[in-house]
Image (cartoon, rainbow, N blue to C red):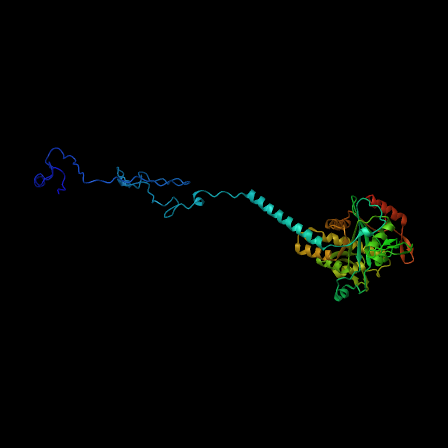
Length: 429
């Protein structure tokens, strides 16, 4: 089989081997070589340009081939890029939008709003939890619905605040340290009426030795009605006879003032509250001692701890009258409220919760007392110290034996002003 092109023979190969040869004036024309086929160049493929970053500018005269051979030669790689690599830099691919475009500026307004919302929700949750925790601690043991023949309620709110000599929950060591003794039962050691209204708070002390009449009443436990006998006795005897309900009944009968709420705290709870807030600063104008209460105070400003505070409010043997003791009680309770209801105490959970726990664990209140009403009472006590209200003893006219007789005319005028929520103009004698 002859593989040479058609028309080529051995003679041609031996003779005119190269056709017309180079001696001819005309150049030899191109010959067709059908058995030699040149494969077409692969179609040019250009990689997709980067989405964000522009294709880097190539040097002048460079169009994908070599700059020295830019005369029509096409290598098929005229982009200067290796397939599969991106525009992220040498040896690496596209590294994503973080390097492909500038990072957006943080939306501080949105972040602040979200942070504020989280803070509000957290504070709301803590507040609600604290409210229910504190509310559950209140001992609502006094039922004022058992009090009979009550006077009509007036404007404002009236609290009967009682400090008892209850030793409930106290150890033998506590009783010795606080000089409380170990008497059975409990009696009222102090009694005050706190009125709150539009004209500021008014705090009226009722001396325990006040001469009052015990009215008819229904026994808080027995439910039996006891008729009035007309006998008069000391005010604290009513509490000793049948507890808080009879005390409220006796106060209302002898004053004509409707009592809305009842609050009682014992010896131990009082001392714990004072210790929980780190003591109470007090200015004592005159030094005094009392071996019965354990009081031993120099004159001047000083900070009283729980034991000292209890001795201060209980002392009566160092004074000539129970009225002096009630003055001290008012002064101390107002200072206690003023120094407890502070911003530093409220925002400090390590101070707030022990203080609330110590007080609420030993408080006895009426069944209708809410935590909100108790808070209003506490801040009203603080207002008395701040000069927003009035503190006084109930007007006294003299003595009946060893008891203190009230000035009935002044007491009637005082009660009318409190009922009508008017500014108190009555003064103690």
